[in-house]
Length: 239
Image (cartoon, rainbow, N blue to C red; front, side):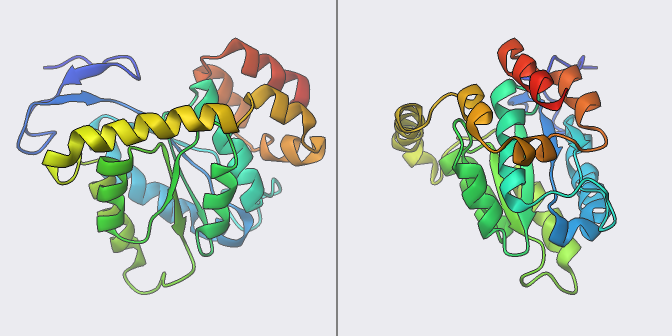
């Protein structure tokens, strides 16, 4: 049997785990973040996500909020701060977040460097975002149009989001220009965004500390962070 690789490393996955191929597959640390208006759905969202991605070899880290009564409240703006800290530091490889419509969380996430967040409503959205845009974060609408069968739509979204390594292209003959455009966008963001540590230090301290004070934040973050500079900044901020 294959040995589980380090996160961010690739390994050949048997066909039974990766349908129809033995392509090189990246195992990821996937973070889930919920803000206050939809926190009551956190347990269901987390269970749905785990049911899809854990058999693929990925690991889920639930950063909350964990319930509507959670004492550590997050706004969609703080979702963006937390997502940026996790992705820039390497503590997470992919972030699942959202809000009532998904729009606010998406805007907040894209305000930060090295975060490419897509607004996802359907399995088709998820697949095309992964294959064409190759982002590292999605924002979902957990209230708008989230009715009977909502958890089924989530299941199908997660299945299509992670069914193949990102950036594979769609249609396949467009893969080269699509990958080229992704690289161009990455370079544009390097110019239009500053480094995250400078941003964190200039933002309202209470806003940032609130984003980084969840029940399991320190446990998950410091165990997985790969950037000593960001880790030192976070330690200074949260005390």
